[in-house]
Amino acid sequence: MHNSMFNFRTKMALAKISLYFSVLALSIAMCGGAPAQEKLHFVIDPGHGGKDPGCQQNKLDEKDLTLDLSKRIQKILTGRGYSVTLTRDDDTFIGLEERAKVANRIPGSVLVSIHFNSHHLRSVTGIETFYWPGSERSQKLASYIQGELGRRIVTRNRGFKPQELKVLGATKGSAALVECGFISNQWEAQRCGSAWFRQVLAEEISQGLMRFSGQDPDAEESSSSASSAATTKP
Ligand SMILES: [Zn+2]
Image 1: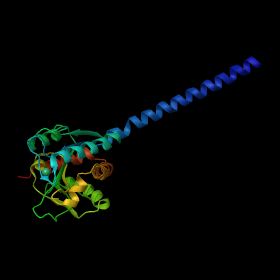
Image 2: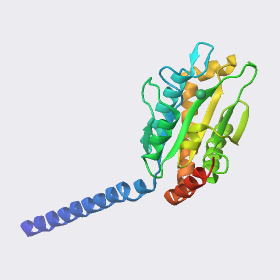
Image 3: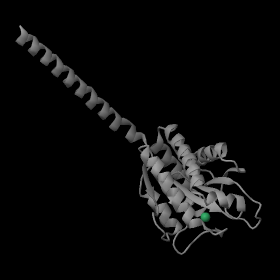
Image 4: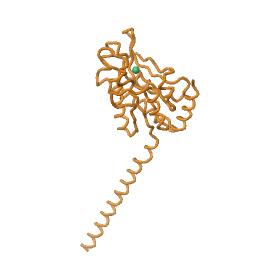
């Protein structure tokens, strides 16, 4: 009696353990499988680099700020399960077409080029995002990025605008270029030169990219239609 009761309890315990592991295996399979396929591959492009410092204002080099901010975006997005490729991860020079090629080699990828701005009028401030004229999906991408930045960051919201920028035109898929602030303005330079502010920028840009990704489950199809739209441009 005692013995058979022991056996019964042992069998029940083993059954429970076995059930537990089945459920665990199933949930791991579910977490690891389905959502990963839907997530976009982002190509983050730190503007300038190497012999090309970009804007140099208020003791800041644009190329250093873009690299630091891009790495912060990469960290946030990879932490959320996205694939991220940087066009450069150190202080090297890369041509604009080569940057686009990095994205073009990854089908369905989305390129975001990171820049800081400069103006001869030192009072000029603000954040703006550009997309290639006529590319609907890139316009949507730019609007999502600018939407997040404009919502939380206190500076002039310069909006999202079409502009024929070479890196955008050469990218076959969706692409946007963010100008994250004017380092020619002393107040904005002070913020852009601070790690905490670049972290805020990184979080807002990443948020925009995740929203863009989540609200468009037909990412790859739309991307190829956007690419044909982009390639029909001069
Ligand atoms: Zn630049």
